[in-house]
Every structure is written in C-alpha cells, then in structure tokens.
Length: 235
Image (tube, rainbow, N blue to C red; front, side, top):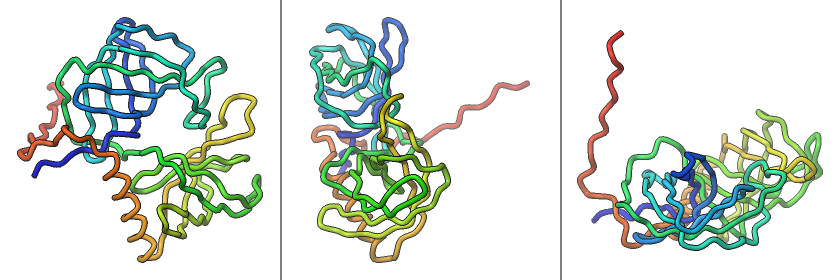
C-alpha cells in the first residue's frame, strides 16, 4: 500500500511570491486542499497573496503553492527561534492551488509535541528542573530552559513521554535566547547515548508521533522516482 507522509506539526519554510521574501514556521494542519501554518513575524500578510511552501516531513518533504484565505492572531508563546522585537504569532490558512509534490527529504524532521517533559540536572548556569519539550525528531529534541547552555555541552536527561520514562545522554547543538530581554532559551539537543531498552522505547514514541501526524488522502507513490544527480557543467 502507498504510505501517508507525516507532515502535520512539522517545520515549514515558505516564500511570498509577490516580493520573494522567505518565512519560517510550523504546520498546524495540511490536507489535500488546505494548509494552515503558524509563523512568528512582524511582516503583514493579506488575503489573496500567493505562497510557495516546503514542508519538512518524515522521509518526504512536500512542495506546493497556496493562496492565503484567512489570517488570524495565534495565541502562542513558545521559543522556537529568536523572536523579532515587534513580532507576533499569526495563523495563516491557505487554499492549495497546485499539486502537492513529494520528494525524499534531505534533513532530519522535527515535530511539535505537547505533554512531553524532561528532567534536567543542574549545570553551570542552571538549577535542576523539569523542562517542557517543544519538538522532537528521530535523533533529538529541544526544550525550554531558564538559563543558557554551551554548544557541545554534554548532559544527562530523563524524558517522560506517552507513558514512557527514558534516560539519555545528549549534546547541546544550539541554544537560542527567546528575544533580547527574555530569560528563556530554546535548547536543541542530539541524543548521543541510550540503553537498548530506552532506545526501543524512544523509537516507539517517535513512531507514534509520526502516526498521528500523517496526512489522510495524501500518499507517497508506490513507484518512487529515481533521484538524479545534477551534473556540474564542464570547466
């Protein structure tokens, strides 16, 4: 049977075709006809504007164009990236105007999650705390911290998610302050070590996230197109 790609709650980059400006956000929901995204921006949007999307899914990325139908304020306050000084979260609902093209992904996906927490021990700049996990991928996750971490710093974390408790060793890959005057940070982590049992439980948790974020009615073809390398022109 063809496979339904996991694209809901995934990262997206999109371009406004009128001025070629790029934006980054998260997919709230996608269907064969509609795509709804959340974006933190200080740039106004208008109904009727055309956008070109790339959605970073699991195994496959989706490419499509869509026309803005509705724009509403979004009640979000999560540190997914550095916050613009005058930016606000908005929800943009668009009508898809082209076929949805699926291509093999070249980057690790991340999916927003809710109800996941991590117990983090004390470090140089932080006391021990229970932190909210924002998003996860096949090899890592991110959480909210009240203090900074150094890139490359190694820590041990206990994750509680979907009835599972898993211990892991992680390495800090990035740490971004949430706004110039904020005392919160988004800390991106790569898992570097787990027991065999905890690794199996992590795989089960991640598989369950993929399952709930699959898009009904949108399928990966059984016969996949062969990827062709672009030949460099002769010198």
